[in-house]
Image (cartoon, rainbow, N blue to C red; front, side, top):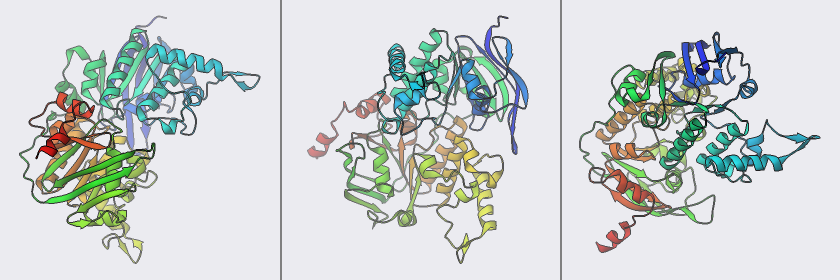
Length: 515
């Protein structure tokens, strides 16, 4: 039976406690097309793909491959049908090498012994063919996120999958890596592989997909041809209302210095050089200062040095006129520092705690939330309910939801709710909109601008050039652990910013010495 569609998901319904994640969804994938699946955080995109990959079983509906009904009970059965998936949070074993991760579960053995030589040859051929260069002998914990993603893609190719699912594949990549990934996806489609691409980045959909299916709150809103639609139209389908794609803000009115960093040095964990090398800058109340740069140029270590997550080996940090360089993290926070961390799972949340407990992580010891060492649960719940409503944090069971079960975007909203609610003079926000949809991004940008207008000092670290240009009042560019430029977003261009970020425009120091 020959069908126009290689995969059809017909009338799929999937339920979890308190929530219908997929409500009668139909999705049809043509052979050789790149089909984007677009929707807000928690719209049900990852759930739908997990049903196709055999991680979940749907309560209703059928899946067909090439027109014939198939029953996919687990990922091994999906793999046998030629379906592969790159997950949003990679499923790799950190202490294994790249080679071992790629063959794990699909090993070639002879008399019970691993045949790594053949595997290595096959992987090398695949990586050359698709331009996916990785070091096969490196341990996964030592390679960049972009490289880890290549490992996940090679895992699919090694298993000879013909239907490739990419779940938010660009959420953790640099702009350069995103361009490379788009090229790789186009090559796959040319070869006749069929791609399902989950995302909420409209630019990427317009650049690479043939068709788009939009989900909203678990229901299918419709499928359109990419060539016949616009970003504005897609964002309205996705959120259910028109969205401001540009940031609305007035001129900044900066006042006194809140954060002063002088000659900060943070050693690197990976090599002999310093990750941050003699960095000085200040952030005043009423302004948003953005640190821009390609990932891995010391931004992470700079923030960890300021916030106390990483030891510094030189320099000084002043907050509201107090020297906080050597303070412990709780005292830094109490002095006036809110921190939206880069890694929401490692540093932002306790994943197996409830949402309400996560929302008081820095304040549970205050009189409002405890008496004689016992938590006042009613107050914690009331506080959580207020923030959930105010920041539109969506979850299956409200305050008692275990945070691990929430979508990535709603986990991020929870952190932002907790940090902004603390109402402190300094907010350090590291990639606050990473992995969020346009509706949530619009909301978070407006919250940061509101905090700025209320007189807060905001230090933003972002890899998204659009965000850097539209949200910041001043841009500091980091390259190889140093600040190589200070730019005014109103007077610079994306291409000039890109040159500074790539380290090819280094006239900042000369200007300083001329003064």
